[in-house]
Image (tube, rainbow, N blue to C red):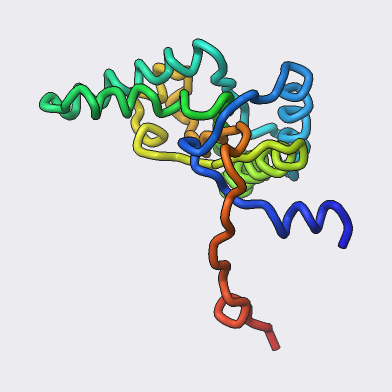
Amino acid sequence: MNAVLDLLSRRRSVNPLAMTGPGPDPDQLSTLLTLGARVPDHGKLTPWRFIVFEQEGRALAGGVIAEIFAQDHPGAEAAQLEFERGRLSRAPLVVGVVSRAAPHVKIPEWEQILSAGAAAMALTIAANAMGFVTDWKTEWYAYDRRVLRRFGLAEHEQMAGFVHIGRAREAPEDRSRPDLAQIVTRFA
C-alpha cells in the first residue's frame, strides 16, 4: 500500500481532550493552510477562508464562547462556564474553516459549501500526514450568530467547522466503520 492510502486507512479523529502539544510550528502551519487551500473550487471563487486560533487567541475565543453561553444559561455553574471557556484551548492549534458560499450566476452555492468541506478535510489529512492528530468539530457555537460575529464572520458566512490539531497523548483506538454492503449501490 502506498503512503497516501496507508494514511487514509489509519486516519481517525482524536478528541481534543486527548491532545497535547507541541502543535505545528509557523512553517508547518503555513504548509497546512496552503494544502488546505488546494481543493476543488469550481469557478476559482475561493468560497472559504481560515481563522487561526493559537496561543492567547484560543483563550480569547473561549472567553467569547463562555460569555454567550452564560447569557443563555444564567444559572450555569462555574465548572460549566470553565468548560465552555476551554473549548478552543484543548488542542495546541485550532483552525476555523469558514464557508463564504454566496449566490453566483454559474456556480451553485451547494458546490461552494462542498468546497469548504473539502478544505477542512484537506487540512485534516495534511495535519495527519505531518504526524499530528486532528478533530473536525462544530459544536453549538459554530451555529450561534453572536459567537460568529465576534469571530469576524459576515452575515452570509457560516462555520464549516473547527479543525483541532495537536499530538495524541496515547495511540488512538479505531472505531467501527460502515459496512460497504450497507452504503454502496450500483446503478444498472
